[in-house]
Length: 292
Image 1: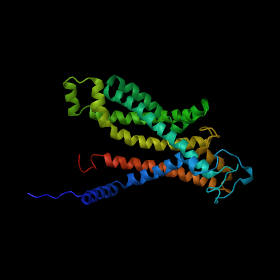
Image 2: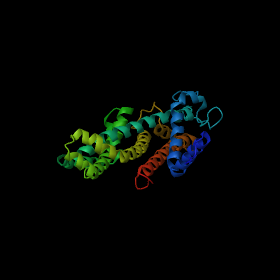
Image 3: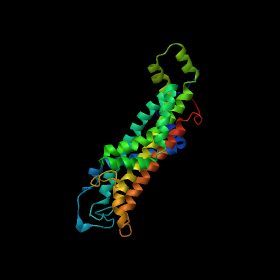
Image 4: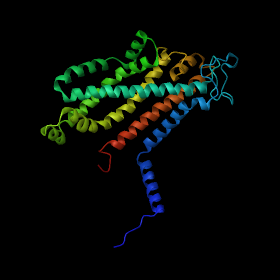
């Protein structure tokens, strides 16, 4: 009996074919991940890319249009818009990722408790319903007004309205999982509750949690920009996309580039995160997968 011998050329061809197949099936993930990678690299490497201090004033060169020396122009204080836009991406990324992870952690714990224990379900869900009844932006603005503005307070103010959404999602998933045969079998053989949660319930609930985290991250980036635009978020001395757009709204007819470039970066980041989340959902959804 003869068989084909795998040569390096054959293996390389198979790898390329698998890569092309992945790209064709999950183009949304590829585009979203590529855009996110570019934005992250631009933000992280901002000190290496731009020679200008994002907070340095230069009144002589105020409201200059885009040029070779100032790629995105300057604002009403002569600050370089390109530098401020890149540094502002750091704030948005940090706030978005931190709020998404924190809300996923707290919401998952609440959702697990509500889904597993009937005595905790009603009171926890009523509290979550109360938080969801308050518009997220109003709750965040109220917290920012009552406290001292800063990045940690912004993260907390954004996290609180997002926790109920994660909690309700996890609860609904847990209510389905706990009725499955393998969970009932684990309970029948005397599996302890911590082991049951960590080895049977939580792993099977990770897929919707991961997808929800991407949507929360996109929402957090937008809410941070809203707060900065309203002047109740990140302090004005710290560049963020919301602050930059807020500073430039008065001069939009004279220098539209102050609003245009930060707004384009903000829209691109939110679109990239949403595309990444949609692609991950389609890839992990068992109804769309070709094999288990």
